Image (tube, rainbow, N blue to C red; front, side, top):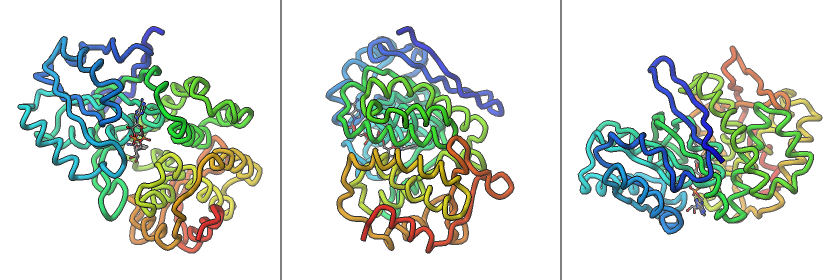
Amino acid sequence: MAPDALEIVFPERSEKCSIIFGDKLLDELPLDNFSEASSVALITDDLVAKLYAHRVRENLSRVAKTHLIVMRHGEQNKNLASVAQIARKMSDAGLDRKSVILALGGGVVGDLTGFMASIFKRGISYFQFPTTLLAQVDSSIGGKCGVDATWGKNQLGTFYQPKGIFEDSSVLDSLPQKEIINGLGEIVKSGIIADRPMFDQIAASTEEYFSMEKLKTLVRRTCEIKAKVVERDEREMSVRKVLNYGHTIGHAIEASLNYKLSHGKCVVLGMICEGWIAAKLGIFQEDDFVRQNDLLFQIKKRYRISPSINRRRVLSFALLDKKNASGVINMSLPEEIGRMHPGKNGGYSISIPKDLLLKSLDNLKVS
Ligand SMILES: NC(=O)c1ccc[n+]([C@@H]2O[C@H](COP(=O)([O-])OP(=O)(O)OC[C@H]3O[C@@H](n4cnc5c(N)ncnc54)[C@H](O)[C@@H]3O)[C@@H](O)[C@H]2O)c1
């Protein structure tokens, strides 16, 4: 497959971010992106390091001195302690303001690395090389980066755009089955928020979409959806909020379980609850709500929710969500499959009473 590209343009800063798609990028990175770097930090996690880091490093070493920096895998390590450790290693390796970072890994590596790039020496350039389905279709795009804090998910972060994103479909072949569900949840979300035909396509043969080969066919389209939204509203002042569908409750569930259930699975649970809220408020068309849930419950039945979810704990984390103001919980909700409700004044934000949030969790049959 010859590399193919998609561009996200930020005209006010005369900047752009190219998303390059291919199946040989591990060995054939577009090296011109790194040729002016004084050095490169290749940041990855311990699992991805064993699989792919040597190939990418070999490649990069042709144009720049490359330092491999490995963090421990898992959401539990997306925190300030890891940032401090990696910053120390980068500093010890002599990285300077002309150095460039490449994040090789899933959303955890990508979010943390982007954050690091935004603060190291007051900001240096970085690129993303996402290696999970979720990271390819979602987290690597849009420049939201950050880490979790003891009091909540993604509580410390910045907006900082990568200069480019390298999407190599071959890395998806080594992903375990559970990572398929993670990515599939975000792909279905993209269908609900902006692409009814894509949702219909998945709903018509859901079983087939539990295979990576089939899911690969939706990666580019899902990236396009996110890229267009980010281009219109980089800083999430209005329309970008639609990307958070399922995430207010999803993030709160994730944090309440101490990150023992993965992000993508929590987002599926979050959409079940937030979709119910939208239907209860008379916003989400009844037929589409039923269709959404048919599909989401097919995904949910593939995994167990363990340990069980505590409703009050979820509410306390939901109250910390960054979209809230003055203790009011705000969400972006669908009005039909393929279209989100514009909210008050086109801000794509709807205020939700706390008791409705608590009741929505009954849909998950939890304690
Ligand atoms: N910035 C954003 O806009 C945004 C959007 C969505 C999600 N996120 C964040 O993304 C994170 C979740 O990302 P994730 O689901 O990629 O999780 P992850 O980064 O933890 O990766 C999942 C697991 O897969 C392993 N892995 C990665 N690539 C692999 C490969 N090719 N083969 C085999 N194993 C591989 C990793 O080592 C890890 O154990 C969360 O922290 C979430 O908050 C951010």
